[in-house]
Length: 363
Image (cartoon, rainbow, N blue to C red):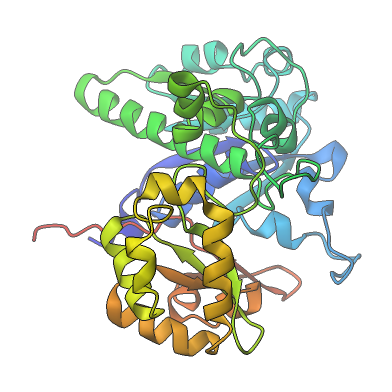
């Protein structure tokens, strides 16, 4: 069985908008589930339908943003505050395996689509609730950028001496989506073993905090408050550092081991650096990063980007081109991940597949 049909027969009802919840719904749609997205009839549906770039058709019922996480779904426009709309939604939920919701708890209760109400009618239901903050009853509004700020990401993102900046992707939403997918999968396993449904709650804030990784432990164990360093890494050098090549293209290094640094020095004909106490260990390179980059920058000007990339690939030095989005989708790997879907008006929409794992069955 192909993984694209792994959840064939699973029914998912999505009471969610913007990015995190819809990304979860699309994940299940990609794996063969029937996903029914309930949109607010009174507001024109998911708010992201109107989040359009200047280049997009202002008369279209969809935006590129909306399309990014709403592939393979059936869309129903209902007013859940009216009996007909509410009853239709309840009938769908009674026959569902999974409900995904980012309603505020008070709104869900008023409309009768909260976890307690739906699971009374459907005890096998898995109800997945997304909220902004750890307390599900905290109904403070918050988009992704608010959580980037509150969880410390913005403080440490940007160039030194410049204001904080947000990440260009709503990464906290996507991190929360991964957390709630994991919770749903565990709940499905539990139901397969016991027949019981579950309620899964994930907050954007806790998802963000769980993803601080080494930046959190740098503070917790060393008392180091991460500062804005651009692409550079607080613990490794040269890692995230960029240099201009002879053709004015930029190259990025990600040298994470001593062996890789030795290989870098040989490729650059800079073996003298290996004998210099300022650069002999990663610790000393972090301390003397600016001096190291001054030396490296001069050498990178001697060859074009592709010449350096070919040399580094041959010698196991991690390096990268800095691609714009057009260049990204020139890559065959990226093109192979495209999902297309026609809209009722004939528009062909495109987005990137959200699951990339390889599943080999009966092998």
